[in-house]
Image 1 (tube, rainbow, N blue to C red):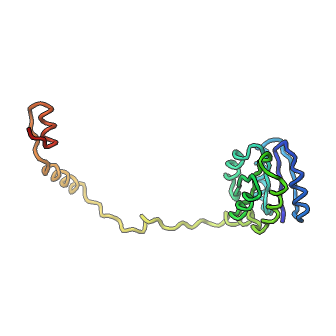
Image 2: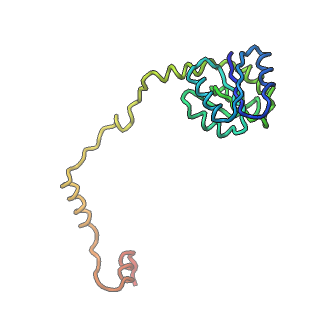
Image 3: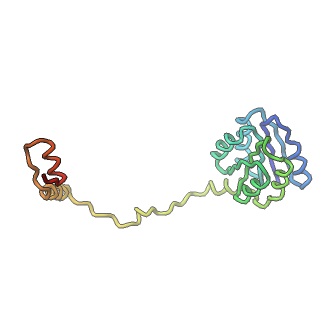
Amino acid sequence: MKAYLISSSSHDSDAIVNVLDAANVSVIAKEMQDDDEAISQVEKIAEKGGADIIIFVTDNHQGASIELNKIDGVRAAVCNDADEVKAARANNANVIILNPKASDQEDVARAIAQGGGVGKLFQTRIAKKSQPIQRAQSATASAPQKQQKPKQAQKQEVAEEEEQEPPRKSGGSIFDRIKDELGIVD
């Protein structure tokens, strides 16, 4: 399993690297100055493929999640503990975003190492991207079309509906007309 660890946090990520190394996970660790630089690095890794998982440690985990999920082929999940990592991996997340303040990094790293069965998602997603998308026919396209009536027939129907309305009394006060419309009898 190959993992990238990208950190834009001031917190130390050595515990994650040590646990992954002990689990025979090949780890490439990079420290970035800010989230924009780190997100660009994730995008480059996604384009190249070859990563089983990217671990992104940042203080701005929600913002990073929003930006990373815009990248084609990336399925990023914010995880605060080992259970959330397992759930994210079970749902094919290929980027785990960690809040360094809220997680026990060693437990999280163990969960990442154990959940290695997802595979080279970046390569699979990029390969699918090059294939043309086949769209299913919409329900309206396959449903029989209603016959449009000529405008003359439409005008005639409107005129017939107007003729069916009861004639209104003209004159009298507004109150008399409202009573007539509501059917109120004195």
